[in-house]
Amino acid sequence: MSKKQFIKRHHLIINKLRSNPCSFKDLLEYLEKHSLDCEENYVISKRTFERDVQEIGEIYNIDIEYSRSSNVYQIVQDANEGKTDRLIESFQIFNALNISDSLSNHIIIEKRRSVGSDNMHGLLHAIKNQFIIDFTHEKFWKTNNEIKIRTVYPLALKEARNRWYLVAKDPKDSIFKTFGLERITNMRITSKKYEHPNDFDANEKFKYSFGIITNEIEPEKIKLCLSHDQANYVKTLPLHYSQKIVKENDKECIIELHLSPTVDFIMELLSMGSEMVVLEPESLKIKIIEILERSLHNYKPL
Image (cartoon, rainbow, N blue to C red; front, side, top):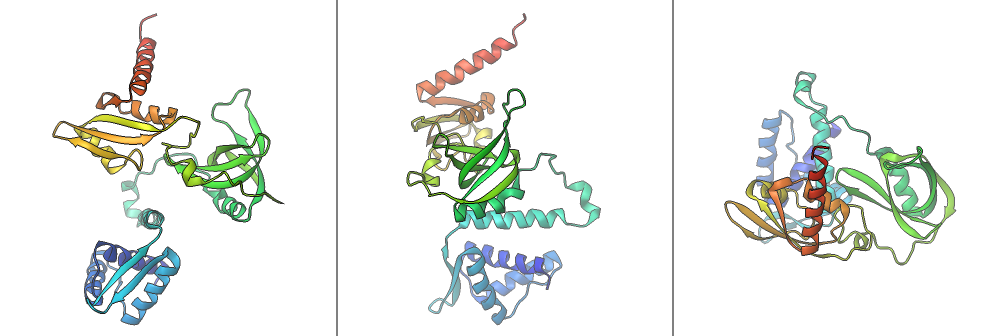
């Protein structure tokens, strides 16, 4: 069996047991069905399945146990469900992109700049071992072709809106900063070590952030009224983990969030155009109106 089939079989087992606990017989029927659909063989023996259970625990940190009383296998711990989902999604995309050339014209890939993933492994190594790093960083909003050499304490990696960022402490001013991985070049991991700052917790720092901006704006309750069509998009891809539906009917949907109304969040709201209205707070509503009025002014005849 190829490595690709081996990985896909793991994913099939995870998906089946996530949907509901089942017996080994039911699991085999599920694997047989997918074998026919995909024209590949995922059928395994009981011994191979037990080995798969152990490997799934080691690779994905998902614990699968057998319940004698109900004669079913079930997931009892799925510690990193979000990360596992991303791993499975990445494999599925990789698998699709490696499909036969006869379908190459039916897969349209966005032409975009690299997200800087080539630096990820080195950065994680530096973060884990608390090594100081330096690199060349190019700003998007640069003046006089500003490219700076940075020396920082790497603390975490964060994804936001399909981009990856390094979160680091700048020893020059002791400020926590973010750097887009696609704008980092000539990265060097030094042999010098730093002490992890006691006042830094990655999850807590970005708890109320929409993206990567974490300036000192107090989080607050935000209410938005979305058109029915726009709401369908926002429900499948929430703006923030705190998002919840307050009211919904055939015409509109009111959602509530608790976050800091930073510039990147305001830009996201504006991208919805007339499909979104800010209900609360009044201060955010006024900001949106001011921006829209300035934009409208730009289109007035000279």
